[in-house]
Length: 230
Image (cartoon, rainbow, N blue to C red; front, side):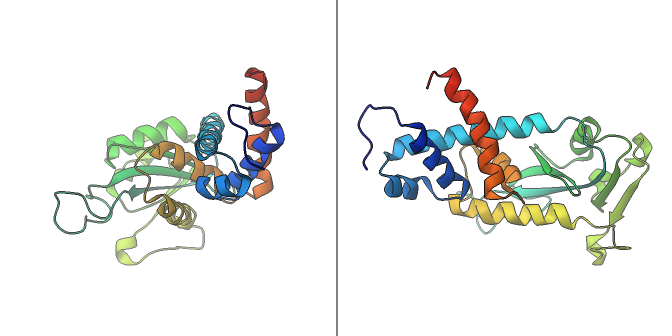
């Protein structure tokens, strides 16, 4: 059934759009499958992403437990006016993102201007409880964490082909998240617009079932629709 022009969507139709969003069907495909205007679908997809962003931001105050810290870099492999491929990793022109993974839990990410010690440790001290056990690689941005009170700091040196020491000393979890996020964002051609919303969506989606995601968004969507009198 085609959408009637200027007529509000029923709650049933809105929830059909939500389910298509949750199972990661594109807005274009959802528009075609449901017979809903593409702009309308885009508007709801943007709303769902904003709901996710607010939800994720509320969840992380002080993170306590066993945490893995790492940075990653996002953006095109080439820039206009720059010859050749961009350097990978630290020193690249790409956008750096810092991540904190609570083992057996979730991921918190933050877009940062650089991966310098001062930048990363300001976030760590703001977000990670002093009693946490911290796992990182050998990047100098993590030097000195013990000196500021994080006396349970363990490291692997990837430059020496160290990837897991004594079973527990690794950052495989956060690296798995980076891999998931980059694979997912490829379908959006890297996402130049609203990158932070898409990043928080990846946080939200990682290791959650479709049913869990649907229930969380739907619960908050109900509150939104009530405020709008729908």
